[in-house]
Image 1: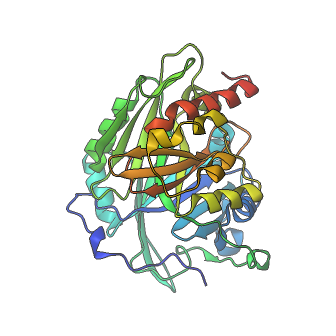
Image 2: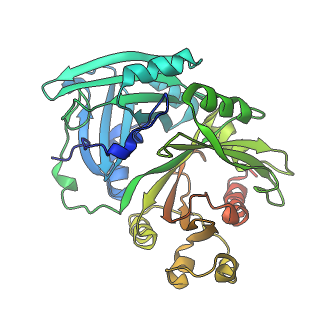
Image 3: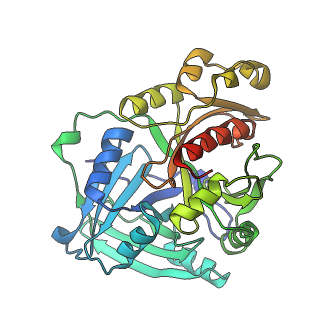
Length: 378
C-alpha cells in the first residue's frame, strides 16, 4: 500500500516560530474530480492513493488523492450546487484552493500565525481513525487560496482520517514520470498588491524575501511583471509572488487575473532528477509544453558555460537552461492544464542552482505571449 507517512529528518528542525517540514499536499477544486484524477494518473504519472466521498460519510464532496514520490495532489469536486466549493469553481474554474504545509505541531502553527495577524481559515481539528490521529489547522492567504498546517506524525493511514485507500487496477501497470516533490509554488496577485503579500509572509509566517525581480528583469517588447521570492527559514518552502507591471499590452499575470477572476496560484514547479526523461515521458502521455524559438540554443553554452547534458535533446524538447553562482538549472513550462489560461506546471531540475531562471525570462515570456496572441488576449 502506498502511504505518505515517512520519518522526518533531524535536519528539518528549525528555530523559526513556524518550522515547516515542506509541502504536504496541493488541493485543487475541480469540476470533475474523477476525470481530473485520471488525467494526473495517465498524463503526469501519479499513482492512486486515497478517496473520500459519500461512501466515507462525506456528503458534500468527493476527493481523490494521487501521489508520486513526495508529491501529493488532492482533486476535490462538490456534490451540491450551493456549496462554497461550487462557488469557487464557478468563479475561478479549476484551480488550487489549498497549499498544505507539513508541521510538527499544527495547533501551535495556527496559534503563532493568527497571533501575528493571520486570518484563521480553520481552527485546529483533531482527526482520528483506526490508523491514529492527525491535526489540521489553517489560515487564509491571497485571493481564495489557503494554507493548511498538517501534523501527521501520529498517523499511519493512507492519507488522512476520513479517507480510504484507493487502488484501482487500471493504474497498476502505469509507470511514474520521475516527478519528485514541489520545488516552489508561484502566486499571482493584483496591481500594487505584491508588497502587501510580501509583508504578510514576513510578518505572519516568518518568511524572508530572498530574490526580487522588477520590470527591467522580466519584460518583453509588449509586457512586464514584477516578482519577489519568499522562503521560509530552512528553505523547504518557497513562494514567488508575481504582480503585473505597466507594458504596451496585457501581461501573462493580467490575463491570469482576468480569467481566474482574482488572485491565485499561477504555477507549481515540480522537481525531477532527469528532466530529459521526464519531459519525454510527459510529452508521450499528452502533456503540452511551451516552445521557445530554436535560436535560443545558438549561444546557449556561451551564456551558461559547460553543462552535463547534450544540447540536442534540450533543443528538441525546448528545455531551458540558466546558471547562477551555485550551479545551473534546467526548466520547462507546460501550457495551461485547463481551458481557462490560468494554472500551469513547471518541470525543473536543479544542478546546484538556487535561483529561478532569470536568464530565461525573456525567451519564456515571449513564448507565453505567443500563446496569448493565439487566444486573442495579448
